[in-house]
Length: 399
Image 1: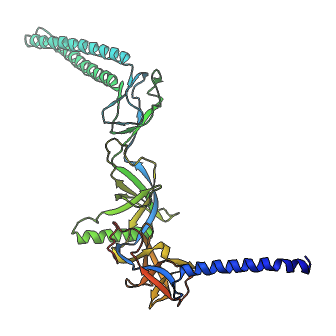
Image 2: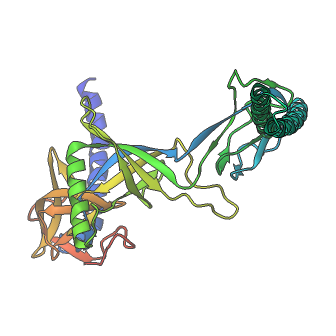
Image 3: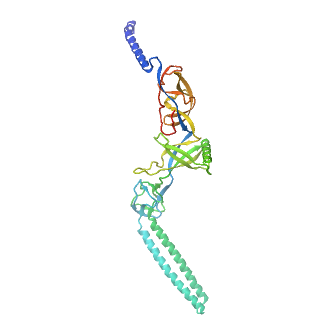
């Protein structure tokens, strides 16, 4: 472009720069007061009852899982359960064709009655032989033979009775019932199929619903701290055992640890490869009217365990906390001017609320809005508000 072109564009460039300057001045005038100070909103830190916690990944499992199998073979003639619904212990699930087993029971009963008749005859013959022996009308050897016949007949009765009981059991086993109360799975085998005791085919499964179990692994350091806290709690409560180890957890897509449980089992050794030990918690899973139970085996969960006694914490909204490389800091207002304070952070005690261990006191006015473009020593126009964030539960008591 020649010099004449540059000269012709000069008025346009000047107008553009003037418009940008005017816009910046207008924006600056809105964000600052009449005296030129920056407008900010400040809040006092909240005081809460908090405790150091550690989080782990866990998975919910059923306290009991039963695979339903046939104990006798035959054709399935009935399936009496709704798939995916809850059943009670003793409820009928399947029925195998009972006709062959009824016939076997009838035959066993007939054999038993015959054995009883033979035993009565042997008893009578033995009794007569003893009378004849007293009159020396029979030899002792003949009496021994009659006694042997009686014992054989008695053994035959015992054997026949056992066959009757076994046939009766087989007939009962044609009705397959749920051994526990819980939620039944789908029908893995349907009517008309031939099931064999030798195949051990799984017909369906039943899982217990209440309580549920939550499994997770704990590192050695957390295990030692948590058990020490449990022993201290037991000493305060004058309990003979080591005390309960409670925990809280949340499910996927939940933000709050609203569910509770208690550890009831810890494995007997640490895994040398990972340095962790398996723990199991008991979780109540009650039924609600018109709804399914909340916890289903296989669900993932995030577990939180308190590792120390509760303490008084200062909490601020996470939006007030800024980062500069590896350092965290907040802005506070002191004598009408902005002051930068480096802080040391603790746990997240509520959604959007963070524990500040060092750097501020409960009297400090922490800047929560209007943080942008603050500089150390900059004059500020202050408007005090309540600390934004959660204010219900968790021990929040106010500034």
